[in-house]
Length: 274
Length: 271
Image 1: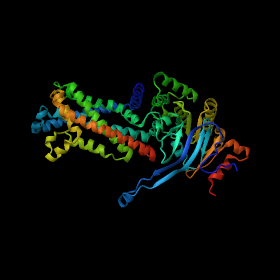
Image 2: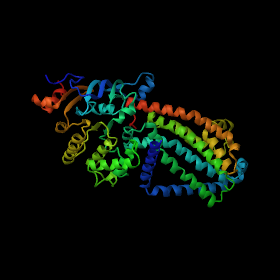
Image 3: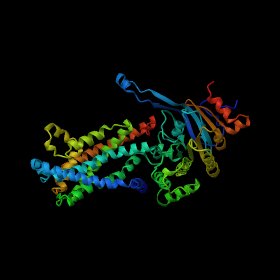
Image 4: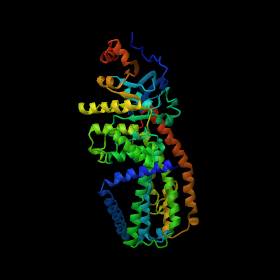
């Protein structure tokens, strides 16, 4: 049976882990209603468990498709790896830096490409945005301008970069988001549903950009949350399925293909209610 | 150090670029400043004869008293709100998470997000004072600019401390910041922005001496109107310094705790 058991992945490779997720649980407290505040002011808040006891090792150079239904915990998982959230239990090591205790060091290794279209200053141009975020990533003076220009070329934004972000299409904004994620030359790039709002052509162009320019030239470790299985097939070498807050499967896509299992079957098997 | 400076410049440049894209904003600030002075000019004609004895400490002129009070009270209120406003604006615009995922720590982000506001906010008190002296005849010819500047620095530091505390409160409560209301709204009422605290009943006067703006405005008036040197307003300045020495570390600790809490609970970007 190829499909790995829940909660862990068979890591038999000698390639070192760049990300170690150990027993991670993430609980979000739910704000009390007025009634609860009055009737039970000292009772602890209820919690929503978004991730439960997740263990996995991600190797250097892996391209992981993070799959799962809406609300499964994919974005929470990515934000935990990116150090934007801290786990309620367990620990995450990014390049041996614990996100709990050495959050800033861990974040240095990670570039985050958000699916939030509004994560730019709309009244500024793409270049002004990029240079601002480059300064936040510790670049200064000439290196800031050089790196920004390099990334503008890298993601193919030369024609749009000096117009305000408010005039950009979703595809252009995603390219700019990728450029921003790459500013600090991170070892790990996290993309949270990068093609969610894109039309088929823009989607295809972005996938080409990731394959041709990111993977082939830089061999970065990439975590990409997506609902598009064909995109996962094209971009990734491993698939992680998260369902109801649990990492229910994590396998090499090539192993699945060898055994004649399509990604769609694999997904259905782990996500559909039995 | 160079990196911190570059980041500070990046924040100031960003906010200047955004602000300058709203063309009417500066014009409206200038109009607002002129209107304030005109309002108090006419109010002065009404109240001056009756209230002169209350003004004796500040040279007896209500217009100069009010103009300085309003100009700086507005600036201090702005300082108080600046940090929580910048957090909320970043939350609402969706940029907070992007900034927090960068290699700059959250405290620097909040502090530097407020730099431009603190600098540009100083334009309005300056406009008010210039218009009041040049057009409305307010006499600030005896002003001790050095002493006033030092008092202003101490005052701004005090309000920065409370501003950071206010920002931490916003991270915690999301909306409805009691601190800004107490120190801002109540401060303007009880701190002597529009009338001397001596007008208040005794019990309210006691409360007014718990509010930092009371010391700031008193010292600023004495240095700008009467030309007092720093040693003559040492009591007020030392009080502001003491408040800052206690409030600033406390607010930094509270802010850091709220950021960590937000990362644990996933509420940093919620508003």
